[in-house]
Image 1: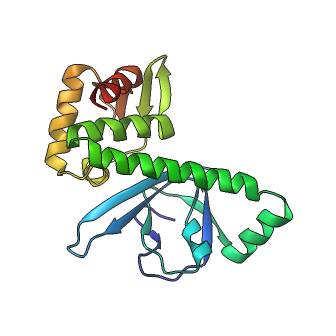
Image 2: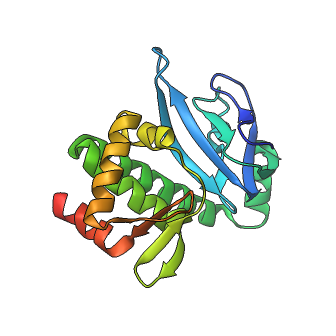
Length: 196
């Protein structure tokens, strides 16, 4: 899939589950007013689109963030393979983990202000897709725009830019000439823990 191509769209009937072989996918929902909410970012090895097991219309849109290779598996075949190979327990564990992550995101949205939510999002992204650069430093090498971060945080792009500058001044986000974010994971975690 080329960058910005939709794998499926909100409201579409799609009875497949997807596994990312390489690349990056984001899922987002849209409010009636057109406002976008970035739900999650998936990378190589991740499964997404599992709501197709319910047989309902898609409630989100899945879009390639860069050139991405995905494997499409029909939901009926996926169910059969899970049962046949005794993989259902592992898949249930995976879904339970995803549910817990979503609950943490909801709790963050309700209990933190937008600056704290951005710190929490950056910490979560650094742990999920960041590459270790030093003992406490991770680089988020996949380009995530301020617009996408604002969708995850629930604020404006300009506020995200303002908060990122404050994080750089405080040493939570490290200056770099590269087009990606480098975060001090330990200091960012301490900041998030202080405000929760």
